[in-house]
Length: 335
Image 1 (cartoon, rainbow, N blue to C red):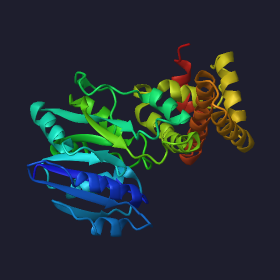
Image 2: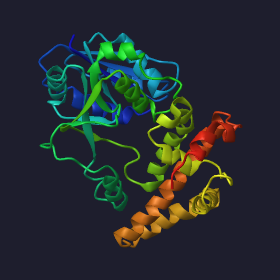
Image 3: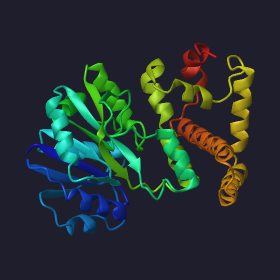
Image 4: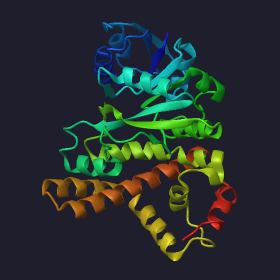
């Protein structure tokens, strides 16, 4: 067995059906398998998987512990492949996807292979879709291979031996957010390189891709994990500025400008202000407001949603002693 494709899923049977249908078109000549992990779904996920007509072995597992980290770990443990190819349940791949991943891994021993994810074309025709594209960009497939300073678990392949050595994803990160970045940090500490291949392109069939409301909802969920990420890595946290910007006010250390920004976020995070902001986005999109103005408002709304998620994370992890935990970060800040 050369490659085991591991797909975690939770209540996305519609997207999963499309992902599996695309995956079934692979032209990969080596022996491979697909493992779908139903992570507490209450929809018809099982039926979708069981009625699939698939060219290779397709297995359905169930993982009771919620969270993409736990689901991926369960799939990896059951995998028989020399390599693990992690794929999200809403990723659409080309017929040569596994060929490209396998070739990249074989040509670069000791490295992992990560592709790039692009949006659905219909998403990019909306005002918000154009803004979202500007956040991530697109690297032409003919561009050079890069050594990545980030990682996404959506489209990455790696030797199973590496995964076992690292102990898999950290299941303390309950939501889909920082668990892949955490795995990457631990891989870099072992000297493993993560290579980004612009030529390995997949499409994100994203539920949060069409509206600022949905996108902010997801970023809010992502941000709930950031305080826990900070507790694990401290000064090695890769997004220290995000942590500083979203902590409660520290009169002793924060600059006047930072205190003002925090107070503004606190006001905009109220339920009424959030509703007004989203309604304003809807209205301005209808009137086709000039892009620079609309994008500035998107940034404010998105920043506020991240702030709300961060505060929820602080509360969820009972960080009552915030000042003592974050004092080194605050006192060592740079302006």
